[in-house]
Amino acid sequence: MAQKSKILIIGGTGYIGKFIVEASAKAGHPTIVLVRESTVSDPVKGKLVENFKNLGVTLLHGDLHDHGNLVKAIKQVDVVISTVGHGQLQDEFKIIDAIKEAGNVKVQKERETDSICCFVFQRFYPSEFGNDVDRVHAVEPAKSAFAAKAKIRRAIEAEGIPYTYVSSNYFADYFLPTLAQPGATTPPRDKVIIPGDGNPKAIFNKESDIGTYTIRSVDDPRALNKILYLKPPGNIYSLNELVALWEKKIGKTVEKIYIPEEKFLEDIKEAPFPINGKLSVFYSVFVKGDHTNFEIEPSFGVEASQLYPDVNYTSVEECLNQFV
Image (cartoon, rainbow, N blue to C red; front, side):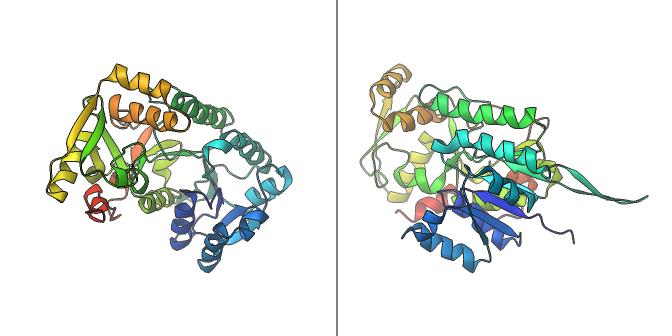
């Protein structure tokens, strides 16, 4: 059996990061998490760090601004996964610089005989975990956020660093509890706001499944230098379909208020921060259909549920059951 890659995760105590860390450790990968010393003493994140320790994760104190320690950390591993938040995306250039200096995150030929050729597929996963930022029709402020991630992609490619970009689309536990209703805290039972005509299809993936699929791809040559799309068939719903499913579950019809595209664009401009950001992402997904309005071509992408059909992912319907 091939030895599993050693993985360094940066941003592991963040929203999606903790699921990546847990999936890595449970899959048997030697896992290192870069954490600030202040994180360890934090009353909330400190508990998360303790859980990491219990899973056998190695903690390495440091941050993205300490270039020397970052290089040392990267030299210890085969794969680097960044799950930093939007506010730290520019810091990913520091990771790229450290990877260049470390010099070990590259495709290496391990052994070759007359009949066997074995490779270690090392790579960098930048902090994506959302829309495919090269295939969006966004407006501000989401437009700038997507552009920042695309700029990271171009820098990785320009340096010849092997990569996998994870397009996980919507986080199910973040969007489904409110049926993607801005300002709501529970699933609506009286009325819903639907931008556009409600027909473009979105994709909702449970965060733990995102972790599982991401880690499954780490040693898979099929995902090397590709976009890994998380598009399981049971998680693809238009907003109209999602509302219809919810109505069936609660045994009640809810009022549907459709917002024409032009009106929705005005609403985005007038909304305060950070609501405008969420609305602009809704526009990209629910009006322009940016999760599903293109075909995944083998030249640039692969689909996770096809690569790993044995993964028992959580469907949208299962996610909604807990709120009925």
